[in-house]
Image: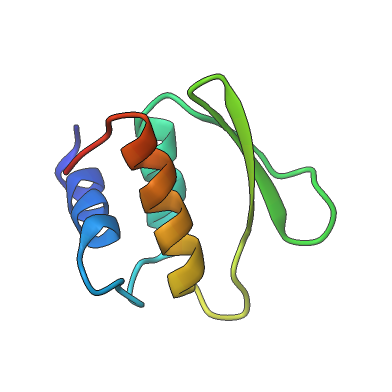
Length: 85
């Protein structure tokens, strides 16, 4: 795994939940794990196809940082499928 993706994974699993996780870095991590990103959803929603599942997330705007709730949801989803930092 690329060092940048490893750092993003560490931020996602950090306790307390970090508010400094850039959404672009989360998407890069998903792609590194083999995901397909579908951004043709309404508004700023993106579908992430990973682990034979589809999860829909809200791409943050106007700021690039992911909110804490989304970071926790990503962490729980990754943890459920055995992904660890």
